[in-house]
Amino acid sequence: MSLLALALLTGWATSNSAQLAKGREVYEMACIACHGESGAGNPEWESEVRPVSFADCGTTAEPSALWKSVVVNGGPKHGLSEVMPAFGEAFPPEELTAVVAYLRTFCKTADRYPPGDLNFRRLIATGKAFPEAEVVLKTKIVPGEGETELEFVYENRIGPRFQYELEFPLRPKATDQGYGAGIGDLVVSFKYVLGFNLAKLQIFSTGLELALPTGSEKKDLGSGTAVFSPYFAFGKGIRSSVFQAKVAVDLPADRDRAARQYRYAIAYSFPPIGFSRTGYVPALELVGAYNPKTKGHAQTAVIGLSKALNKLGHVIGSVGVGFPLRPSGGPKPKEFRAYLLWDFGDGPLWTGW
Image (cartoon, rainbow, N blue to C red; front, side):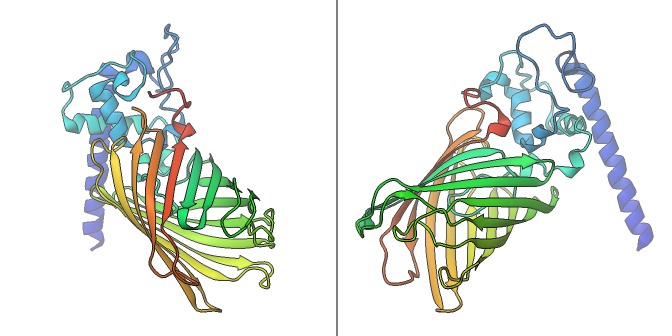
């Protein structure tokens, strides 16, 4: 058995080395004049538009499909510089794959970074496992209760696997039940990628959310106590579809003010309609919360549709409708949800159009 494993490992290493050698050959023939020997850009480049630096490990968050499309279709196809030409069918698929694999090697610690192929499309309600650098504006509207909620989210990465996040909830106007407008409980959270496997298209993360009692209890804007919520998040690509899930437990500092509960969200994203980076992505989500003290169990099904709003695909909008399945405390009306995000890790807001 050990000899078989050694033979398989040796075969994989030989195949990988051959792919990188082919990728280097393509790079030196077609790319090195602009991107330079180190991948950080030709130091003698005279244009005001600098070529992207593949030595910047931040580029690991970009999926291989995007890089291949830029090579084939050119920069303008994705709202990037006209300096990047379209090579069309100059390179067969295996050479495209090889050169992209070689480009990844310019980041010297690329093996520590989750690859962009695992950066699955954000969902409306289910948290993702991939560490992000995003600004997100979310809203939830419950027409039957006259309730509108807004939430501003800032996420940023530190190093290969760590992310911190700030959530600022806001109720812009009073509800039909008389609950007042104002700021809700501020949430500070941290995420760490425990592991990932590109071959299996899966990623697994853990994290901690801390809700601070910044919202008014009287106006039903906050719980009145700090709540600690450890969680796990998982994502897996299934051909062109994606499965994502998140489970968490809410642990309030004061159980007389807030209840301990278990939360979960599972989601299935269907194959994109159009190019994977910019196309429409329909999704189904099931979101739930269980209170072990009262035995209350609330569930909501969310049907959503997201779409990149620009050519680069780093500005995305999503809309969806939530249907209560097991409402806690009696029937509740449908919810309308939406988000607008900017992935600033992929570039400034004004680029990519």
